[in-house]
Structure formats: C-alpha cells, structure tokens
Image 1: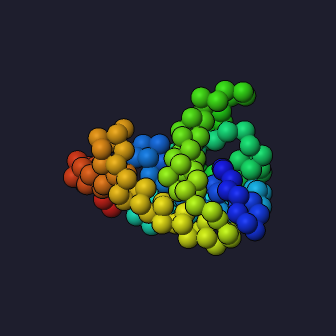
Image 2: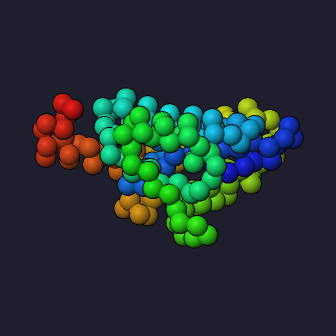
Length: 168
C-alpha cells in the first residue's frame, strides 16, 4: 500500500503483485486506509486469475504486518480462496522488498511527474499505468518482456506440456 497527495487530500493505493510474472493482478484506490482497500485489491486479483481459468488454490499470499492485511475479514478472504498466508518478519525491510520496489516504480514513473487534483485523476492515471506496466513495460527479471507476454508464453507452454491443465 502507498499514498498519493492530491489537492483534495490523500489517496491510498493498494497493489497485488504476482511475484512469478511481476504482473499487477489487482489494485484499488481509496481516500481511506482501511481493510476494505486491501480486500478490494485482493478481490480484483482473485477475480483476474479465475477469469482466465487459473486456480488460486495454494496461492501463497505474502504481505507485511500492516493492520489491513492482518484484519480478520482479509484473512477470511484468503482462507475462502484456499490461499496460504505468508507474513513478513518484524522489522525486516527486505521481507517486503518487491512490494516496496513496485510502490517506488509507481511513484517514480507516474505519481511524482504530475500535480494531482482529485481521487479520480489518480484512479484514471493508475489504471492506465497498470495497463502499461503489465502489457508494455519491459522487465529485466523476465528477459526484457512485459509481464503479460511472459505469462502468455508460460501458460501456452504449460497447456501444451500438460493437456489436462487446459481443462481445469
């Protein structure tokens, strides 16, 4: 979760990042930093995975110890999805390095370049940035291809290698 200053006040943005593909699979913004913000981002991530027929059973969900991610309602959503929870150790900044790196990229590539007037401005720009990040931005860790392309190649190979995977 990160925050953005606007002329209308603070906007909080939560992302759900797939560590394997570096794809942002869920995100949400709000003027309040409550558990619902994290829950809505998680719901989007789960919906995105399921709409392509990918099982989320056994998914490992890693987060820091923020109250939004430790909330009973949030952990219930993870349990319903049959996801495995992983929580960073206390006081270890490296445990959440990927999330912090994503927030830094988001702020460097988008947020710090403009003056933001409203929540809606941040939401529209974030939606465009997430689309660009997933479909066009090259990632060195992925062999200099965008996350969407990396995943497409992976799933094509998996469905070819394991024909049963195409039907589940």
